[in-house]
Amino acid sequence: MAFVKNQKTRAYFKRFQVKFKRRRQGKTDYRARIRLINQDKNKYNTPKYRFVVRFTNKDITAQIISASIAGDLVLAAAYSHELPRYGLEVGLTNYAAAYCTGLLLARRVLKMLEMDEEYEGNAEATGEDFSVEPAETRRPFRALLDVGLVKTTTGNRVFGALKGALDGGLDIPHSDKRFAGFKKDEKQLNSEVHRNYIFGGHVAAYMRTLMEDEPEKYQSHFSEYIKKGIEADDMEALYKKVHAAIRADPTVVKSSKPAPKEHKRYNLKKLTYEERKARLIERLNAFNAAADEADSDA
Amino acid sequence: MPAGHGLRSRTRDLFARPFRKKGYIPLTTYLRTYKIGDYVDVKVNGAVHKGMPHKFYHGRTGRVWNVTKRAIGVEINKQVGNRIIRKRIHVRVEHVLPSRCTEDFKLRKKKNDQLKAEAKARGEVISTKRQPEGPKPGFMVEGATLETVTPIPYDVVNDLKGGY
Image (cartoon, rainbow over all chains, first blue to last red; front, side, top):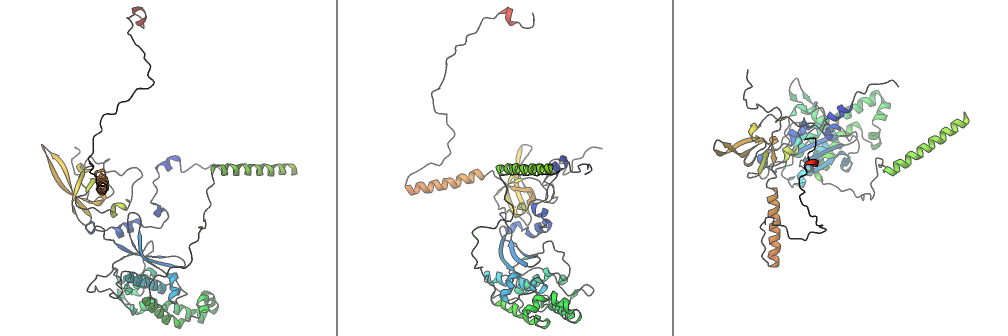
């Protein structure tokens, strides 16, 4: 290998300032976090809740979190992998599922705080912009949307979850500019289009076009839907049922699996000094033995 | 032309961030709550430009007299001429630390309350006053040998080193 001049000298490392751990991992946007968490000092210990929505490849996480010096506290959480309990088994990361997850979280929180009678929210999911009206006795539960590191384009699933939480009865400051169906030219939300997305209409439309044009791709792409027997026309009714089921019983179901006694180890255990020396001796012996064989052969 | 005496004059090093601590400031500064009557230390954070106190107050400790949305009112003593004035300034929370000057007092208060409660339960009277350290108790010196030292008469011949 050619001689390469060492770019990163010892001096470079001595002066290097690491970013915060979560920034190094690329998980937290501290600029946004500071602004979301900062509470007015003259409100002392009043918690400021964030409505956190995060998407993984196969799941949606929606949580209500308040910050503290020891660590953030989660008030309530809803995952899209709980949706099979309410009748939705496929498409757990689409816009409609995000709506359901947001709705589930909102109803769960309100039930936990015993405000669910007062704040029904929007039982009928039209796509229009809906904001909670303050009731007589208690003010609505306020949270701030925490998007994370997602690019907030119009029609993002994050705003689907936001819509679900709003219809569920939470008070989250928002504007309808980023809901699916907002036209920049007219500067107005087309609530029909938004309603279409909430009920999976966009998925149904794709199913229909695929069925006509490329049946094989339809079979491969929507195989889970076909297995469960869900057709393009069933989508709306299915989601309506899921919304009703969520409103009926949003309580948490604790998993009945007992916690495993021994946790599975995901990384290699660090060897002790003796173990490492013993390993080195073994490797040297093996190397010498192989070298001797090579010598005797050649 | 001369240097000038502006608000932040001569603060090049005072307001500079310490080595390898530049950039975003950790969030506990924003999460702390302050109540009126607390003691706080004023320590300027050069990364935040708003709500900075004057350089005189850097390193001073005072009591909180006001709490607003993003800042705290602190009452600090300043000597002006032949008297000390209680000055009231408003400082953003990024430039303020909770002071540990009363920590010892608070711990002692808690401990004393506990001791008094226990003593009351037992029915005896105790004094929780702090006593100053008294003189050390007397002790016998161990392993002492006696060495008598006498002065030797001055010897001109040997003692004048380096020639005379």
